[in-house]
Length: 398
Image (tube, rainbow, N blue to C red):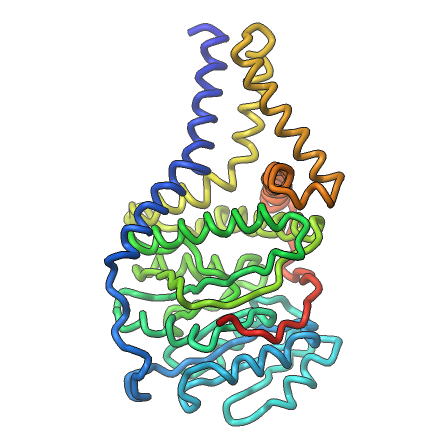
């Protein structure tokens, strides 16, 4: 095999991997999910179940300096369509230095408890302590700025009638209108939701949405204080225990989207750092779970590795393009995409257009994933993240 042929093979393998992870796998999951949606069995019940037929639930709200949203969140939680005697709410304040704890304590009652930890330790530690304080069958973990539809909790809980279900995740919808890259972000989450539906049908959803999910309390394992991706770590624990994670698209909540590109970049860096931590800790499906392991590789691992696959592909393509017009044409197309990405990075106005938003969002994500992965492998990441600025959201999704 000649040097030229080796480069062609390398490029072909890289291209196949990228096409698989960003096109073939999502399309396959979308087809499976759409077909399943027409015939899958819905959880039993019509919304009029008696209290005796429903399990008890603790709603856990971890909070660090959430004074702008905590009152709206508690008001929203109290309006959930779930029997009062079966729903308990815990607000776990992680070393706050604003009015979050004081505002939450004004709501304290037999149903609402505030855990005010004086020293900030990170979300993983606070969640672990809050779940340990819960004495209900199920625990619903959610973010302070995520507002539930009135029936969201009930729709998720109904799935636990199936004994093989260990956790249920809902559809947390981002308000992307104010985001400078809203078109691309909206497209990304539509694709993700279609993948979740398909995964849930063939086996298990590969990771809950940390903004809103319910888990059997017995399956929750105390998290290491340095855990970065608490929701994904919990998800892997559920799957490795032999239980499934189900996606319930009718359980809807809303969350304000990230407006600034720099904030989104930092968020994705953190996610990738946590992903590296997951892999290094070997917290993924075992070889005895072939379907789940293949789904993990297809949906998560290959995507996390995609920046490095792209770099290898670009290197091989650059050499091949020197002497081959066919590869020069491909390189020229990639160059145009790169220019569109740069224009999107420079111009906030043009970034709002799909033509520039999609290349920019994809490129930004790849750079962030590369940096975050390297940081996770070679650095010493801090689990205490700086949250983004919150907007007050008093409106629950209908």
